[in-house]
Length: 164
Image (tube, rainbow, N blue to C red; front, side, top):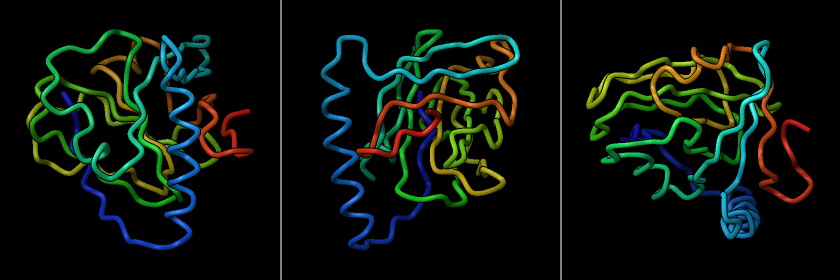
């Protein structure tokens, strides 16, 4: 149940260094019993989501593909080394997902609600995004999440702690 990541990665020493720092920080987070937490601050209140991290190109390509269930407050957080236009699709993803594109300042840029399972239609971020949060279809509506809402993200790269 996963949107396939369609981004192309360009190798650079900056990206490699940042990716290594992110992987090290994520390793510490992944040892926690509940996993890293993303908190969304909306007009309806705060909602926490336990996330799996998609840091490497391989993790991002697979994402939540082939999954047949996803808990209400569970999802996947895609972490990119820089802001950029992001494009996802739903190939090989059996359940609908909400795809939240998130700016580098940890605010919601746009939401693709209830993305159609198995669709190969491209779903653009409609602006530069550094993070993408995928949750079950309808989650954003149920929790009153809208563009502009702020998120608190897990510490991912040393002193860069988005959303704090």
